[in-house]
Image (cartoon, rainbow, N blue to C red; front, side, top):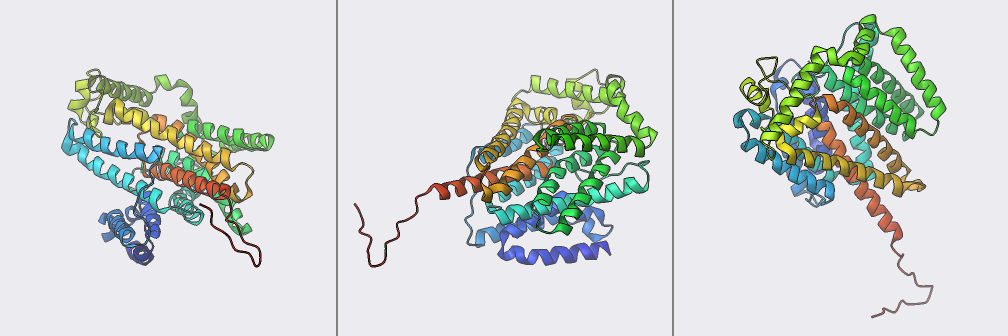
Length: 435
């Protein structure tokens, strides 16, 4: 039944995509973020829905009246170089065949991000993209929050199987990145019913994040709430809300959750944390010996390669890097890490540009608020990703592309406002051209 519902919905959404390529980008984003085919049990489970919609979107874009171009900015330029460096480091890597699978997946992610920069180019489309992200990922927030509430927090839950957010830790950080976007939609929805509904989604999503039992997400949650508080105009109210949220967690969640949260204080004695330190040491050693190109995507997960660079590993097999920073460093060397950090820096520049240039402009209040929420999303990513292998998460690059689209739109609006209006002749008069 799920398969029939999914394939019917997919076909219905494909129709508008043939004539409106930006709709294809929205469907592409929905499939990439939600992975709905991974939630089915029949023939759709193995379908490459992303590939289908990507091909249709690109063909529709070429055949449409919209200009087929990626806007050239500092951010997109870095993204292009970063993508090229992915290919270079894969084919100079230590296990090319193993790394190629991840290269293909990451190239799809970058292609989607470039499509967003080219086609999501007005307020309505940006708003639609944010809604798509909230629906696609908010599904797991609502589902997980209700599951946590029903089971009194005694069981953790997971994301869609065989996806980048299947792991409870990864899902928690992805949901944490989503919460600011839900806040944005709530603040810019005309319907009171929708605003109340989104407030409920925020509440259950926070429950879901706590219910993942992810210690990294707990640290990221603290940092994200701190960013919210810092940006809030009502700091006392925000402080009271955070206080009661903490009280509610302690009162509701079982003792084993509290014990896990308290184990953050003794992380240096925890085997999981020690495993992360070993992985980070391996990543650093790889970059020291192969500084330009690293080992190639996830080659260090092979035991022989991991032990070659870190003979003191406590396991026979290699480990995931468990850090977006060490992940890129080990995969793509110092060049890759510099490019990755430069992209994140440019995202911050894009966001701050929009925040400063739209302050006090009523017609751009929506852009101002969205930029502020994007900034908090990247705070969650930067903190939560420090202990997770989420460097190539699809949702991150959609938000990177969104920061580009938002800055371009604001820039064009400000230029249009600053341009002198054409002279209008009075009745009975003609304009005489000057030379």
